[in-house]
Image (tube, rainbow, N blue to C red):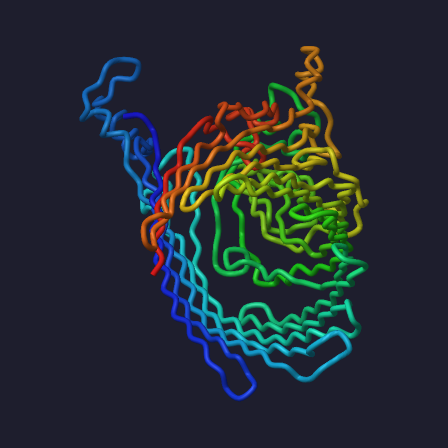
Length: 499
């Protein structure tokens, strides 16, 4: 029986909304309930108890041919379950407060109540460790959130719009936060405007990071106390251990501040140019140290490195497990430019064409792994390309629409800023592989909405079957799944119905 897996996702989303007018207020309210269930089915998983039985009874012939019954005796099917529920009630209202030099002074108020729950349950065979070489994840948690916000739109002068917004939120599992935003847009001339914003933000720890949860996996590490210098004859130099990702109820929210300044320009009819400069700083980013980092700093994290008994009093035993707890660790400062140029044409009898070129050019991305460590420029290193862009040509006429889109993600070094090109690649004179090539794909789409309330859509992804750039740091797959995918050319078909 070949090992394999498949995932089934079931979603149910119920929304009820209403709007009305009360005096000078325009009021909207909504009720939402969303349930998502994910099930991962595994097949052909190697069973420890099944192997022990096969060894004792001789029911399985290692290296020989076996019946389906004998194979089934050592292979098992598994079923992991996950469920998330969100229920929310929100209401918002807006009204005019008066007149200013540039127009109406508008006030918006709103609030939200939300309840979130989630659970991840591993298959019983996985939970008791009967499946060989497979990690498990188990978690459960819930929380309540209350939020309120206010927004003021004030056109102080003719051609000058300003916005001021405040939002307060309270989470039952970690506390409260207050964020704000100040924005302005000034019309310089016909078809040209400047805009800018300053905002503060926060991200609450996810339920899996702060509530009762743990993910069990495996890591290969070097025990610096039992293997100070790596050698082939010492098992502690490359020891396979259990690595446990743990939640942390003491986590605080990630906090951020952002600045933007942009130009909107319409040099002539149906042509638009948008250029935005931006800078973001985020503090207290939630992450984990690697298993190797925890081991290297074992004395700093008491109880995080669990050692097996050595059998000899006073002699340190080998590592059996490492606990990797979520922590507020990193600081990131990044800035760059967003750009978009679009052109529209009306051709013949109802034909509409739109050409759009948009993307991001990152100018800096500095990161501090932990407080007290240096702030390093990571742009151009692993996972941090300088340029991402998209070029699209869309056509529409009546109920029909079609489009072609090209995607580009720039190259970067295949190692971190603190790492270096792998010794094996240097020895093989293949240092060119230490730079991951740009990832370029083309998509095509076709849609039809000529039936009442129905839209049909077909998309052909990666038309030319571009392969993901080779990543030498991924020995199992050869590619970085956060940057590219191995799917090649594939067709996606969907239907939507509105009522």
